[in-house]
Each structure stands twice: as C-alpha cells, then as structure tokens.
Amino acid sequence: MTGHENAAPSDTLCIMAAAVRQDRQGAGLAGKVLAVLRERATTARLERVIAPVRPALKNRYPLTPMENFARWTRADGAHIDPWIRTHQRLGATILAPATRSMVITGTVSEWEDWTRMAFPETGQYVVPDALDLVSINREEDRGTYEETNLWMQHL
Image 1 (cartoon, rainbow, N blue to C red):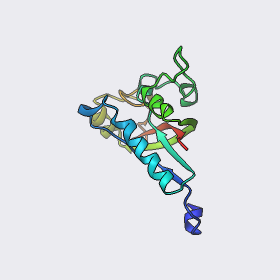
Image 2 (image 1 turned 90 degrees about the vertical axis):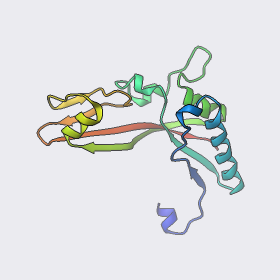
Image 3 (image 1 turned 180 degrees about the horizontal axis):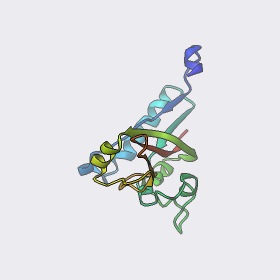
Image 4 (image 1 turned 135 degrees about the vertical axis):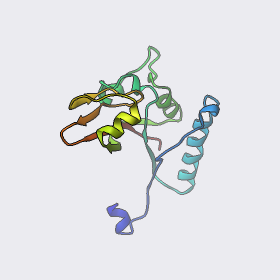
C-alpha cells in the first residue's frame, strides 16, 4: 500500500479469489482461470503473481497448523491437496501461511444458527468445513473465526 500511495509502479498481481461453480468443478476450469491471470500479469509486465490459496482438504485437519499442512506430500512428492497441486502444476511455489485471510465475528447465537451447533461454554470448537478452530467467548457473547490460507507465488 505504501508503494501505491507513493505512486510507485505496480509489480504484483494478487489473485484474491478464483471460484468455479460446484456443478462445473473437475473440468479443469480453475487451472484455465489461473493460466489466464498469469498471462495477463506477464502482458502487463508484472514481476509476480501471488494468491492466498484456501486448500480444499485442510478442513479435514482443523487442528493441524497451516505450517505443517503446507509440507504434506503424497508418495510421488506432490502435495496432498488438489487445489495446491493445481497451482504447483502451473509452476507456483508455496511461500508461507496467509494468516487472518478471512475473519468472521458474530454473537454466540449467530454462530449457533450458522453452524447448527451448540456452544455451551467458552473455548475453541471444530466446525464443519472450517480450516481452523472457532473461538467462542460466552462472557463477551462473541464468536470469532480467523482462517489461515496459504500464500503461493506463480511468477
């Protein structure tokens, strides 16, 4: 932001989201979107393309820190996560965890409605489809979810 505020030329494209409708998944469209964005960055003479990637399988391991998940590979050396593998097939490398990529706060009642779960006491909870734990504070009537994604660089 400092560079932008000081009128420094841009050198990075940050892909903030790339999504494919569920009924169209598995057809290679996500990889095509990433390839087009990389081409646009090259055409614009940007030095790099980065993205805070939300691993598709991380929700199965909410107790595992992203730093550990980032290192997990299959026997063939490829990452266990298919979305990370898609980026890697296009030449991307893992940089570091992207902490607080998404933060959601709400009252305890809202969290109970959203998740269809009960949060009877203050603590950390595993919530379906969440990559990280949800923090519930009954005394402050507040639930907070801070999701960690994974920074990856394409160029």
